[in-house]
Image (cartoon, rainbow, N blue to C red; front, side, top):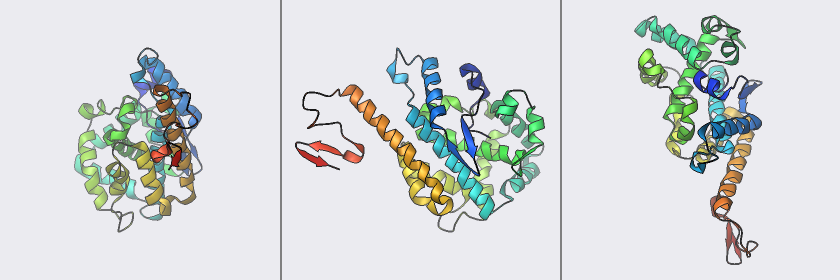
Length: 281
């Protein structure tokens, strides 16, 4: 499934294509799609008359990158550590909650539809019965639901929460019951690594380390997940560079260059810049 965006937002912004697409076994955000979505959100928010409502495409891209690297970590865990983690999770929840689990997955796919369901090519129920790339769609839906829950928990994702707000799922389904017990279930499964803990611990670690910074979370992933994702983490550098460029552009908007710009330019990332005639950073 592509990055989870609610059906209501898709209809409001007239989005019917993939926002973030699969590349091989690892999923990465698409910069052009992020810019297009940011433009659509800014128009819907009326950011032209109220700059405080502006959505920055670089931050949106970074958020999508974090979400898709979460998918990549889950895929690595499923492949190398616990292939049956989500199949067993569905059985585990069914034994405790019963048929309400199936109703939750159905409601989730209806509210956070993939392209085929959104376009009416398949119903949510038909899609859930199928398989994609060898993985039953019911398992993929549970994985996506878990990452939706984590996205709503992530403070750094707050500016974009309207895209994936989960409040409609909460009163209508067993969403709260499943998500509240999911960390406990994952502690019964093999850890990602002894020093890392469960899959839930691993996925939550970046937001605990840097709760309010997308760049900080990407830095954490780059430093801590390299042994699991390897060369695929190179794409994080692109996301960080885009964020840095946007930070500089925002700074320049409120600090236009003066006559001595060549001596006293805008501060760069990490405090880089000129202090008098000396470059620091």
